[in-house]
Image 1 (cartoon, one colour):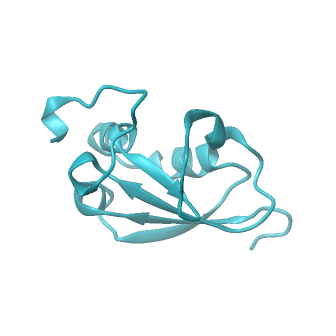
Image 2 (cartoon, rainbow, N blue to C red):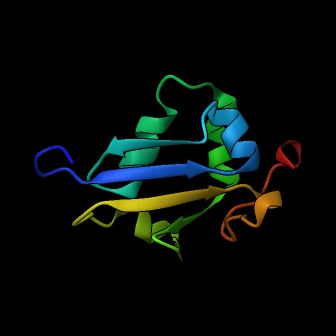
Length: 99
């Protein structure tokens, strides 16, 4: 962990893994949303669309929109699950090109 900034371990599944070009990565961020923004940096629009369609588990619990902005007090593991891997954010419509 960087001084005062928690580790966020992102684990990508199925199509999210393909779009990320890696199975996992660890970033340093104050919130899950900040970590996702860092992960998007330097990757194309396709990756951003895939992540937008995914559901997220933070330390094994389903993350909702408000959870993404909660300040982290320690390291967390985030599972990035595309719709066909068991995930789809219920508050967003999944584009058919991602299925």
